[in-house]
Length: 589
Image (cartoon, rainbow, N blue to C red; front, top):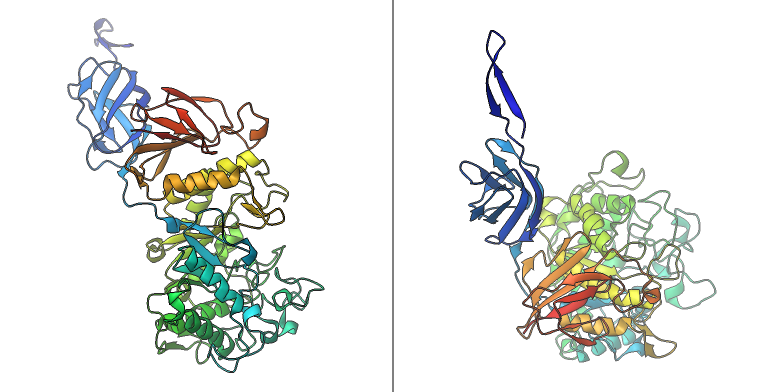
């Protein structure tokens, strides 16, 4: 402690008063908790008694239970929000230390959070559990394969429509108890486009879905182009699209059909429209959409009008005009999902922002020639915001802590209040340069991190790409066997989390690199999913590849029954366990 010397006018020292010392917080234990949680604040220079000193949680005053010079115990006060804890002694404030105020968890994790994309009918019946499905890349169940020639109307009985493979898939889903699924409407048939209009000059061959030398309609050029009767400014009849949407929506909503086939509740107009040289000049890669914003908004609005009988159609009957929807609803309970984009690259965020609002400025502005003239019409036309949240070159933690907040930052309040889904995601293709997830044990650990963190981040649906391709592979079609240990980890995670009631909101919280997700299992038992994300993906080279790490973790007393690893092996309870990158489940009685 220093001193302040008081000196008289004559220059002699008249008194010495001790100088106040600055209080310092060293640690908080715990560093997170709900209102009422007793927090121990360790530090120095707090004073031997409270007196007029205070403790605040992000500005909200607490009522300390115990006070000493080096330790204070105080419950989290009502109304406190996450932020710095500060101790103020004799008017001098300490350093601030972050405390995370947790909300009591609400709701139950449903099986419909677990979605799959299934490429081939031969993969049925599936050997892993799931509760949601997206009709996309599903081998013969997309627009070009279903409508092989131009139908004369939206009557699904027209001979140009072949519903055979779609119907088989929807029957398989119903037989597996999966209902209210998602379907993506895009990929334009060759007969419906003008290949000479391709802005790349490649006559539609730069599209993701084109396969040179193949004669099937699903491999034809031009599938990334808008229909020929829809103008760049969004005007035109758009009858080709409306007939297609009318036909499929009426077919799958036939009351007799729905007795034996799954219902489509979620309709997505277009897949990954960010892969575009029109909307994102300079894009290099496989294309998915080579139209304008005005065209994409019009396709979305026409889908909404045809299926739900609601909304407004912009640039109809001509550019700059708009027409209220007057169609009778085919399914008034249906939900329109936004066209999908990613969050990992600036151009992915830019195109989503401009589809919704056409309000980007500077480097975020709509590209010249992209016809972004519809204001917030895109936002008004969709009920759900849809991102594709792959974690191939990054970790799931990076997605939820960095990428997803950037996605939310572009949204206006109306869209922040809408449900958000990941319409596609996984560890992607491990054979691609930069992918982190080629190790099979790392893949196993990826799955519980992916689903727990994405639920914690507020997503309401999480669709995995895919069950039976090399992207996110759970089932090896060529061998006819499940890919292990990932498939077992999938089953374990599903069984752990379906029906679970999170204790906190957000579900998962972390102290440094250690993540913990506390919940009540469907059977009423207490449980905690825990891992340490500091370890990399070379699990097979570690002494215990199933754990993939070597951090000692003190098990909270309530988890005294057992612990389970991602392979489903059950271990005796212990006061201390070793954790790593692959989550384990701690269980209580």
